[in-house]
Image (cartoon, rainbow, N blue to C red; front, side, top):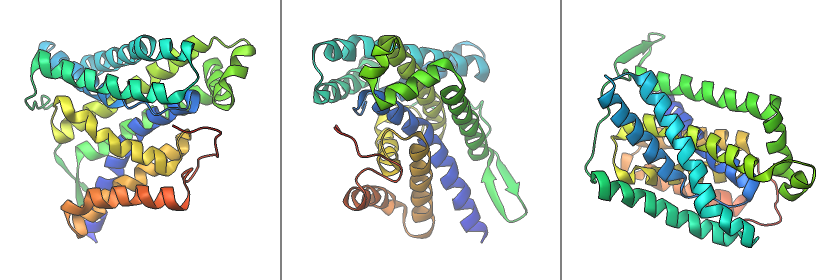
Length: 293
């Protein structure tokens, strides 16, 4: 029972980090109808910004975290303006955006390889990882509990932003029909920049926690393929679906690793993807779109 509870907490913790990343995928998809595979690069930017900020500013996680979120949000906006906006203004074919996102992912990864090298780096021990006893039945890590709390805070903040703010209303309108939202007076380019900034901020939070869990290296963004799988399982374009899909994947990974074999965790994850596409291609909460890329 104690082992099951421990794996359950580990799965929810991992799923909560996936959720931060998957929600970014779904946000962009809900507006532009393409999967932004450069999102993995944003995670790397957040991780490295936090790493160097901590080293140069006396391990102040508040300053390091803030700079990581700000830098990644700005990088996401610049990526959209440089790589995606010129394509959007010339054509409505979403496949070109998808191809551009793959190219940007490779560019960001190799920029880090060329400039700072490809070796593994560990963040300074500013995030607690000491064991914590829960309810007298299991032991977990303070890191797992903290990642869950932080994910809940950011996802709740996003939900309030979407539901209560003027730009949140515009995002919901654009998710229904971007062109009509523009005709109704919404500044479409500004809206898309805000969406990318928010997605970048969430990616930075996920990047910091993934850097602590797995160490930091330029190819860390490849892990986000699982967050993308979670978004597909939950339904691309659905924010609640991205969260539910992420929790399902996190639990599936940790329970498989804890009770069967850690070598089978990826097999289970991508089997879930195949089963979802066969049984319900739109995902658990997805809607039938006119076009998918």
